[in-house]
Length: 453
Image 1 (spheres, rainbow, N blue to C red):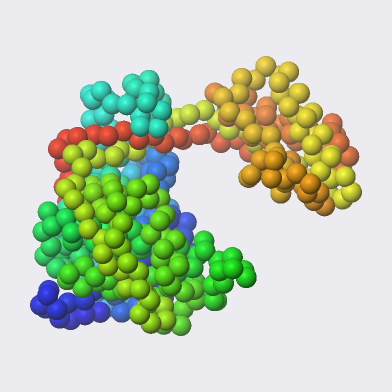
Image 2 (cartoon, one colour):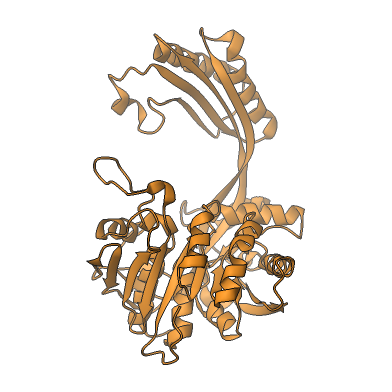
């Protein structure tokens, strides 16, 4: 961790402690204890995650934040506090205020005597969207067509409010919905005093954030393919660290001795992740241009990143809208041995006939053999005869009762289907879907409150 005071000389180290809500915790502990960090960032919020969190908050006003918040904070808070490492996270989800209060409770339980938590508000725009004439980007339908099924609306805010939180001296910054790269861009703006209209620096900071946001995905997770892309010691995969200088140039690395690897190939895979147009990556802070990015391996597990730029930020913010979209009834049953695939196909045919005759109105349905055609469809599975298969039927319907009927029909294959079926599982779950709309950014007002121990 650097102690230099001149921003022009400073290099800061930012670690990525999580890439999604259920991510592994041991690599974050390794970063907190051995990463020599200035900042540890936990990116834990996906599109549907926040809609589900809003549903939880509607049932209990004390909930609605990330379910692993306590586990993560108990694991790293003492190490970070003792070394002066600041934590930034979107684990506030639908209830950042309650999350901030939980962090204070955890700090007290751990014996800390001083901690300042800043809570960022303003991403929840549900009261605003109904007054606007908005269309759902994915379907083109009017937002109003969703009626009372809408549960949540959260805008992707940028780095500005997070910078404000850091300027207030926060040790922990808790946010809800924020653009993933902004979690990493904010400490760069704060540390180096970057202007938020310096589009080149905003672009370069955004590429750093984009490379870090999925944590282990850039150190070899979701990359390994034995014999083609081998990743050493994948079982002990380490999470990445970015060393960033005041001009925005960065080097990606990981804790010495940790598993995984940082190579041009792993960084390229992450650089292209979720990028529709590399020259026009729309973010709330900048329209980033990654088309000129260069990745250079300067030493084992050290890759230099430079060449990103950007232009003026968009006039609108993306808003994720969560809404109720029916129920899914699902059942599975296995067949093994000689003729397993034929028996599985017969089971699917029988289930299709029975469900068609049941009068259940399917909104969507899937009939598939896991291990044969569930992912790539029937054409690529031709000529392949497995020893065992698993029948899966899933149907989305408008009500829970019909979803239960679907699941029960699969279970009935025990005594009413082909020979040798076993291992039935069934489930019924409500569907919380996510769509997107654009909202004029000047309608979204953020604020920061602080909590102190």
